[in-house]
Image 1 (cartoon, rainbow, N blue to C red):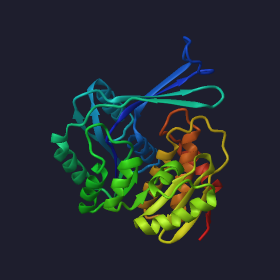
Image 2 (image 1 turned 60 degrees about the vertical axis):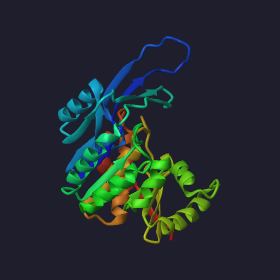
Image 3 (image 1 turned 180 degrees about the vertical axis):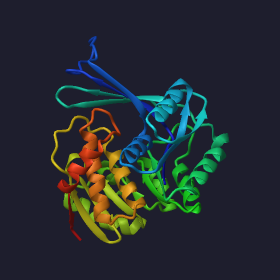
Length: 310
């Protein structure tokens, strides 16, 4: 089983417009609203690909009730901790030119006096899981070392850990030595801390040094340009299939889902990277974040190119 953890769960709402014009009243052509947050997106994709998954996390208020009810309706097993306050809404405005504008609410404040409950929840689920995926931002009220403390709890219970976050939460989380991290290029540059990486050659060199320095497996996602992966002294260039993207939001979460599912199934590294890439591309074909069709993933699998560079 895989457990995904979303500490700042959300309702992902998407508005379709012909164009976003500020300062004017506009009518939305189409609306979708689904439970979201990076870990929930990953859980949905794992479920859609036939994996055994539980979506864990923190919710609050009426929005939290919607998130729980929607996960149930979608057939996604979940264990959610409820706190006071209102879970956030993340609004994505899509226009006819393919541009995406995101407006992200902050979400509720986590009460630190209940942190022990959260650790117990993660430890219990990790004891039933091969992999625990920690994804997304930390809610207000939780310290920067939260993912490090939860990673330690998960690993003590015997699970491998995938960490997909950014900033101080990622830097502190690395101290607990997760098995994988998945920053994007900007997040990696901020984490690595040796100044701007001017081109892919500089990024490749930094990845090899960083993997040795941090002692973890690293995938740096590059949006439509694919990804780079540094694993046990080897480096891979990942090139995605060419598609006509509808909505790229959530593709990074789908990549994480594919990689975690492949690892849970014991697939070879190259095959896992290919599945992750196909899942990310399939997500971009959907108007909703964290949603893939299995037939799209299967069609895109052979079109994902994985090249070993070093």
